[in-house]
Length: 133
Ligand code: CO
Image (cartoon, rainbow, N blue to C red; front, side, top):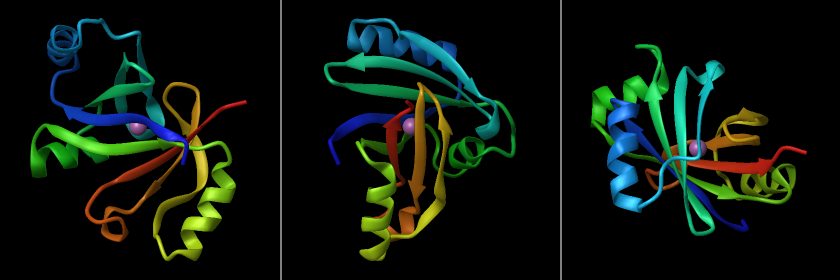
């Protein structure tokens, strides 16, 4: 793992949360991106070398909608940046971690991503992400 690439935060209203985070961080989001395959609309803020990703659901059956219904707004996942996602997947599998998806898929912000199941990672949803080449 190279660094904490971003922290994902589930929000009910992306526009209102963009304004909240603009005040909090002192900078505006640098992009808004819809990830249709995940039924989410995201916005990104730079915080030093890391980012904050806000996630709003675009479908009542999305993972974010379910998370919001169950837990309300708040931290949804921690994303670690990696340089070789396939090597990390193999390493973590050999350590007994369980993946939600084992094959990297396109995520927001020009990344390929996989997710580890929170049940195998101490209750935290973990994303591994690598820059798309
Ligand atoms: Co993320």
